[in-house]
Image 1 (cartoon, helix red, strand yellow):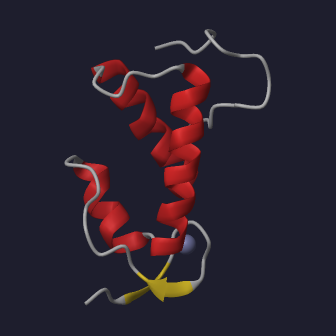
Image 2: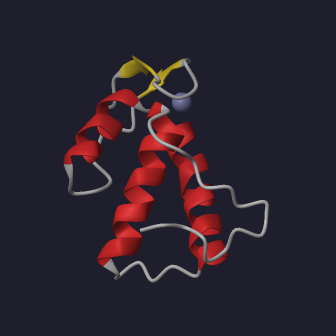
Length: 93
Ligand SMILES: [Zn+2]
């Protein structure tokens, strides 16, 4: 059922994700503009972010942080958190 799109992240023609993975505005964009393969890469990235920053995903601030990270990851908006250096605890909410 997923239609082929030119993915906003990798630029390849691939089947779109086809569903909104988060219940906010960016979810609709992800459904229509991002491929399934990039979404799986994000899920790995998200797991690393959660582990690295010790995020509690029930926390609204952590959810907002992850949404901002999604915007950076898929659409190049804003700054991606650097998880390779010792910046733990320096994120400004
Ligand atoms: Zn892609």
